[in-house]
Image 1 (cartoon, rainbow, N blue to C red):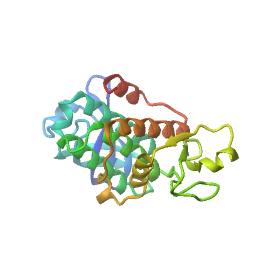
Image 2 (image 1 turned 90 degrees about the vertical axis):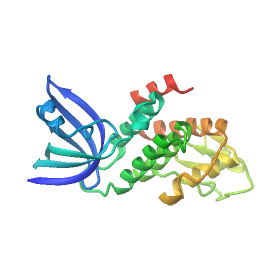
Image 3 (image 1 turned 180 degrees about the horizontal axis):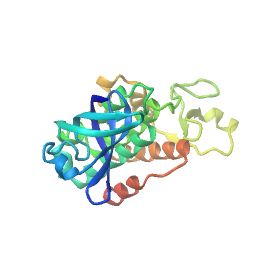
Image 4 (image 1 turned 90 degrees about the horizontal axis):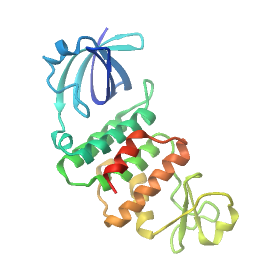
Length: 250
């Protein structure tokens, strides 16, 4: 049967000389894999709708759990990202996180689509830097995917303000200075009040206010390192696109 859905192209891969497989984050089906046979013929009528990071409307032929692209029309092409290698590298990494964490069929992917589209729009416009977008996306997608850290207060005594707090990436929780002795063998990261406030905002703020915070550049770099460590501790895996990103952004 034919279905119509909006989605963002996350990944493309050639199959032979003229066939391609696309990984797409869709509004209705979550992350799907769709095939395009004879891409040159198909692309003539689709323009840039099948390019990476393009937000398009897809008409798909579905046979059980397999999808083939019948047609596609671009809704939004993020040209301002394509012309900047740092932005491309970050968008590629965010796409890899989506492939890893976003739901497939059976769960609502709406918030993942909103998050990625908003991040792409901010990157393209230059309203937020790659250094700002990266930790924001990392922490928010982890929360969406069921890895939400508990940042309300110390996991032992409940202290939330007035004391220095440490973040435990392996546990996704906080400890105050008075309670650090209760836990051994865990990585602990001392947080500044600004870093903790930013993390809380990213995790708990509604989507319409998500980008409404500020940190100095050095604090963003630290926040980026913290969010990376959290992802690695929770997922126990690395991402090749992140390694490439780090060759470009110091």
